[in-house]
Image 1 (tube, rainbow, N blue to C red):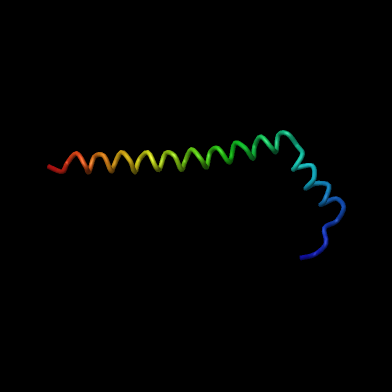
Image 2 (cartoon, rainbow, N blue to C red):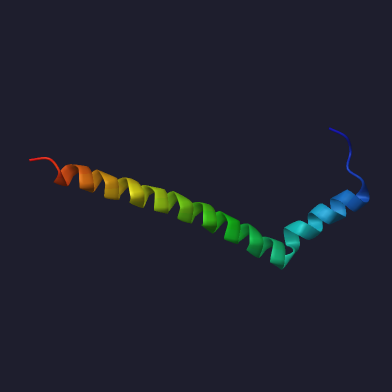
Length: 55
């Protein structure tokens, strides 16, 4: 991998310490967590529906 220019390093540094970027990153993280929880919920609902059908 090539060396980064000073401008590229500064741009990366700015993204890391930019509060808006940090908030956006946190929102993305929570959106992924929500999707996982929604999938677990759907699976649990399906599991309960299958169990109700058994005698």
